[in-house]
Amino acid sequence: MNVFDKMRQQKLMSVTLMVFTLSVGILIGTLVNTQVHAAKGQPVAPDATPLTIPKAVEIGSDFTKLAKKLQPSVVNIVVEVPAKPQTGRSRSNQEDQGDDPFGGLRGFLGQNTPQLVPPEDLRHEQSGTGFIVDKNGYIITNQHVVEHGDKIMVKLHDDSSEYRARVIGTDNETDLAVIKIDAHKMLDPVSIGNSDSVQVGDWAVAIGSPFTLEESVTAGIVSALGRELVDQRPRRSFQRFIQTDAAINPGNSGGPLVNIRGEVIGVNTMIATSGGGSQGVGFALPSNMVVRVYNDIIRDGMVSRGSIGIQFTDTKPETLEALGVNHGVIVHEISPKDGPSAKAGLKANDIITSINGQPVKNGDDLLSHVADAAVGSTLTLGVDRDGKSMEFKVVTQDRRLLFANEPGIVGENFGNEPVPKTEPAAGVKFGITVRELTEDERNLTPDKHGVIVTSVPEDSFGEDIEMEKGDIILAINRHPVSSVDDLRKITGSLKSGDAVAVLVVRPAQERVAQIQATPRGGSGAPPAPRSKLAPAPSQAPASQEASEQMYLSGRLP
Figure 1 (cartoon, rainbow, N blue to C red):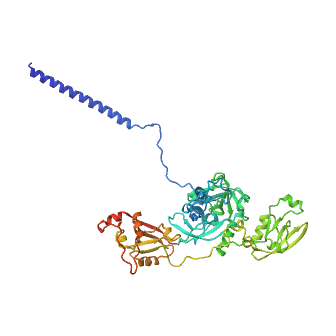
Figure 2: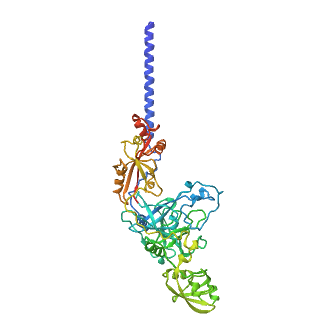
Figure 3: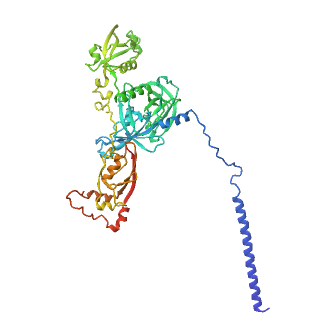
């Protein structure tokens, strides 16, 4: 065998060995891969049964039906409170006030170091709840929810719109308010129950917006009746509460407390708390008192109550027994000194035992008899004076006038009430001022047309939809706006309650500075010079990129 045959034989053996090695590798890889796939196909937990989702079936209960029935009638209220320049209160304390469902039941636990706060930082929002009592948009809530606000917005269930509300009237002594929205559709009012039928242990359900969480429903029972909160500041004489352990939190104020039939038996007003949240001690003003206040407000814009001009304190049964009577109210003070009782001859320490022949059991009974009497009517008071029975004729006077100098009784805003009965003004006004565009400003718009906003007053519709000075109005409800006359014609065709979408171009900040500095042309005025910031015509697209086009929308009040 020559050298070439040996080399050929070695080469053949090398190739054979290489092919054999590759074949073995492929075989091993195939086996390993097959085993891996087999392992992946096996369940990780072979003895576990997969879960299945059952068919959706509504369980339903009395509470479910109640919630569905009441939710369309309960509204969320957001109130914008204007700035009040002042010192001595920190920003955090001011903001913490918000919706204060405690009505004076708790005060600040501490004061931060007094400091000056910019007025714009003092402006804040407070929120609460209300419920519809009339299909035409009348809503009951708490006075402390809407007081001091200059803009009251209401949100309805399953309605993305916000409705501007106006105050019909308030009553400081019960912390109640009546507001109205014009939704231009029939609304779903609640059913009112008789709070005299409520018993301790009855189911009670609270619906509202605790911590701005809308349409929240909580349940509990009636814990007590006729609760008088002696620590409340200011102390309100006509508040005798239903106590409940249904969870009530900040934001629930003004919402309904309902019975298991879905009837409103109270207005959630206060909670007793040490930490700012629900601890199962909530208070609702009984519906019978709410109805009386509401009816007075929608009739007169205010609540009129009679008074005989006396002050009294709670009297223990033992005191009355020792004085020889089994019921009645001891007069503590004749006030004011020239009031009805003073004129009739009553004195301190007299015991009022009856009114118009009806026994007076206690102070609540006395208040109810006198407050329900028409102002100017004559009451016959049965009085025990030093063991002798006597009668006095007392002419009732308006409680608000008798206690005009007592803000703790009639409220700090006495004299500004009742709220005048006003109807929405005829026609529609956006409340803004506008002018024609300059040539430079036209370059900021896609089609070189529109009008520019020069001012947006507070409490205007323009402010409601967040319009800003410098906005360029292009169209309203898809109707192009090329001039101030176009704007007038379009807005003149709109009516209260209409939905409005305003297409605007909002220039970037440097453009706003240019716009505000541009002189307004007029008769005999020279043409406005081209601003150095304005681009050449060929650069119009760049100027448009520096602006933002958007829709501003809302419903006309």
